[in-house]
Image (cartoon, rainbow, N blue to C red; front, side):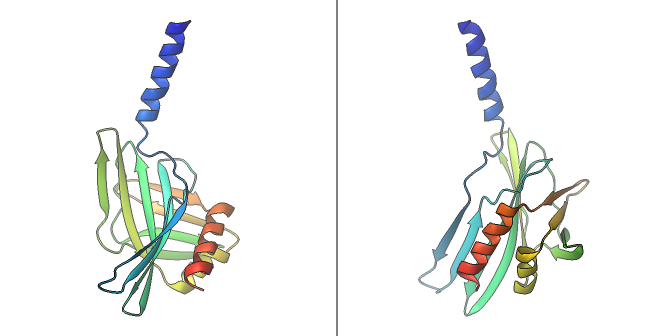
Length: 171
């Protein structure tokens, strides 16, 4: 019996160890640069459930020289590469209306100890489009990779987090 218990624990540890990302608790952070006067507010770990890898969709505001820039950030984590496409690779359907976003800057790709990868892409979004995303009844998105794509739907918790972020830092 102890041998069976040992095997079950070992198998669980192997499977847990193979997870590229453990689901983390949603948070918002703020960073300020006293030399430039720039401030950044950013969401982390806004998990969007679905099939085909772990996906987090977060928002970030960067206040630079009295200019406010708003970005969405996709973090994709899995055991195999997705190769997020540069350019127009993130499409939303917001109450059936299409919104196409293009990457801003380089896409980051990392390997974690040979057992998992993550890819991070940034997309600039207007305040008006961000508000549409928050207050829509239904929001779906499609993320395009080199040879594949994935789709997700924002759930009420995702939209609530975006609304709280908007109310605290943008309204």
